Image 1: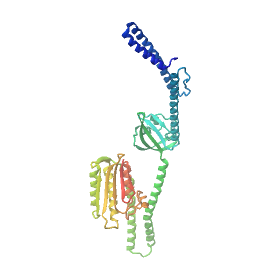
Image 2 (image 1 turned 90 degrees about the vertical axis):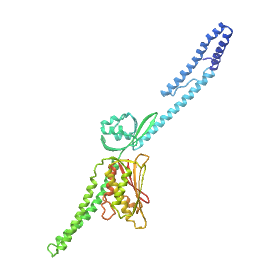
Image 3 (image 1 turned 30 degrees about the vertical axis):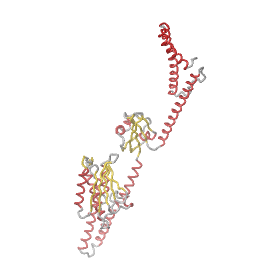
Image 4 (image 1 turned 180 degrees about the vertical axis):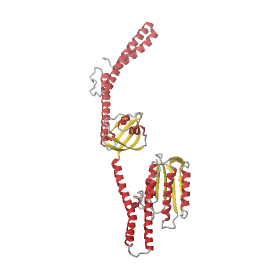
Length: 435
């Protein structure tokens, strides 16, 4: 390595040039120079291979996390010192990049372990690419490398996580060594180094469900107590009155009136119980494909026929016109008819008699490919304090109303895999969302 790189290149070129010239002057000298040319090339290749070995040695050291690699910068030739200095610089840069990447990965792992949501990253073969401590706690596992390990916890859970797809929102109760878990799963996806990965967010929603269940039971108990007390109180009072009059002189008319009141109150109580039975016995949906446009047209005609005296104009907007919905048409018709009936009653109750009633029905498909049906009317807006309770069973502000129409409608939508909600605004707008 005593000769520098530039000198070797110059010698090799000079030999090649001299060989070309000598062949034109004398065959012997031309042959001699040609014979020297491979020696010059070998000399050049030896230097090249020496530098390649240095580069490979440096890469192996970096791959094995050997940060002690260092090439001498006091070589005899300037070119050798320049090459070694460059290799040391490259090694330092690569090591810093690798070190920073490892620190970032450790940082993100610590963040994941601090969140209260279980995070799983799976590839398409079911192998676990990443997980945090909360995911292990929810699943009741200490080691988790493949979804097939969940067969020991619950085979249904293994199938659920193996077959879930991006955009899914799933829920499943299961038991592990730590007790019962009611787990919700949200799925998204990402591609890393040309590999498709699914990201699963896991949450135990037992506490939230328990709180909602208790709150629902409290509200329902209040309504039931109110309705039953309203029915039983007059029955008890009239019965005591009639018993007190048995020994006194009392007319048949008074007895008849008292018994009629008891009878009508009892029938009201029976009607309330029948409404409760309807709420708890909604049939299982039997979905099929049907066109939304023709379905909405039938619902509008039916609403007009049921309320011929209400002055109202219907506006429909179905986009696209051949929009198709997969749901139980009979159950969905109950929801739509109930909403149209409520809208027409709201318009009819409006004290502004000069205002013409409008009911707008819009159906479309959003960016998430969910089908939405919006039903709005320009009748009196629902006050905020009442809007909070309209979906509670038996809650009503209408005289003679059962209070189960909207609660049954929401229950039907949930059984259909969708939802029914009230959109706040100047106009009363209900949204049916089919996922």
